[in-house]
Length: 352
Image 1: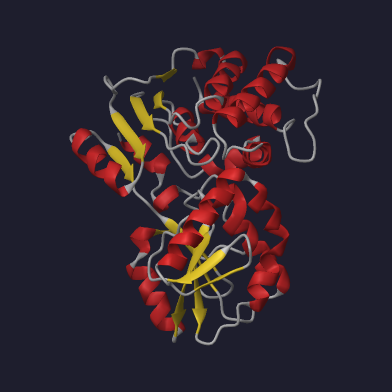
Image 2: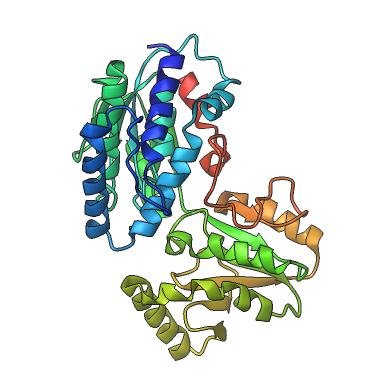
């Protein structure tokens, strides 16, 4: 199968997904094979909501919107134009997927197939309904994909390389179990924002999206703030206010209540507004409904700290501070070439 065939197949998948967004779910008669798949995919979405309380309709549709916007022929062509796929020898690549946000492993899945390899997927039990259905759609729009996509719930066997995502603890297991195989092993990472006190209301409001989207469960969610000494959090809390309905989500509210009780019993200093707590802490990973913060005295010293701690950081949100910074409100809208942990997955796949 030629690269252009694979691009065409995924761009058709993007067309299919474009029917499902937060503004509306509306059938487009021009989309290929819609009579077979439109209603079925809505059913799979419903199963995803019912199976995992964090996968609300809003968040599932947000994820689908993102992939619909990315999976266009122009985006795919631009992304892949810098690589040479001429000498790829097809291998079987296993992917161990996380399940913290909807379709979180889809980029790895896309990279493996678009590179011309076979994929063997071990899904998280928290996110098991959407991807297998989309595979069926891909097989119909591009029959050459048949036999190149498989799923297992058993121990992984008979594969040539692996991409595995998990916690720091599971990463140690992955490194032992997959030793001797070409691999990308991903550990815990968190995202941070650097504030100067000069941010506009619009920027801080956009930051609320980086914090609350997916309930803060993604590695691209901002879980920590770096703020200057004497920073006034009043504007920050004001900008967060539009997200106050989040406290009515039972799982989020339970975490909020639990973590608040822990902080109060431990007599930790913290600020809260009824649905979000902020606490001074040097750690990068904060509990649900909590954002940590740390003061800085000097931006140059902070830049060095962020560089030294880069293995723990997925994204840095700021304005005019770092070359690799991400704009406020954009952490959950990565481009196809924004690789997790800054490891170029396509380059890895072309070398195995």
